[in-house]
Image (cartoon, rainbow, N blue to C red):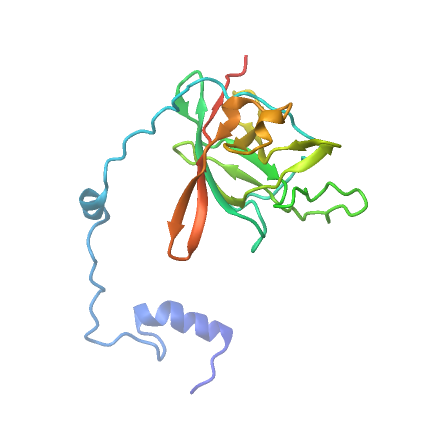
Length: 233
C-alpha cells in the first residue's frame, strides 16, 4: 500500500472520487445513489394532525409555596433529576407550563427542580459535608418545548423531620421562570401521603395523584403537574 502524507490524503479523498485524481476513484459504471423519496412526500403520508393541548381542569395561576433552605443555583440542564441508579421508587413527572393571560402553552420556560433523596436528605443539608462544586444530586433544570411540555424522571423523595414530632410530606421543589411572567416558587405533593394533613406549608391545589405504569422491565409511577404562570404586572 503506498504511503500518503496528510496533504495527499486530503487531495485524494476530497478530489479523487469526484475528479478521478489519485488511486481512489469511482468505477466507470458507478451510478448516483437513488433517493428514497422526497421529504414532502414522506411528511404528507405520515404526519398525523395533533390536537392542541387541553387546558388544565382548573385554570388559574398555580399557587406558590415556600422556597425552603436547600435551593442551589446552577443545576445542570438534564431530563433526569437523580444520579444513575439512585435508590428509590421511580417517578416520571410531566406537564405543561401555561400563560394565564393568553391561555396558551409557554415554550422556552425554565423549570428549576430539586428534591430530597429517598431517605429525606438533600445534597446540601449537612454543613460538615457540603457537595463538591459543580456536583448536583437530585437537582436539574429543564426547558419546555414548543408546546410548553416538560418531562423528567426521578425517584419519590422521602419525608424528613422538621421538629420533635413534625415531618414534611414527600415533595418536589419548583422554581419556574418565563419572559414576561412572574417567577413562581412552589412545591409538588402526592396524594395519600399521611403527613399531608399535618403539614403547615402544604396547599391542596399542589397535590397530585400518581398512577402505576407497568413495563416488561419493571414499573414506575406517573404524575402530571401543569403550571400556570401569572403575567408580570
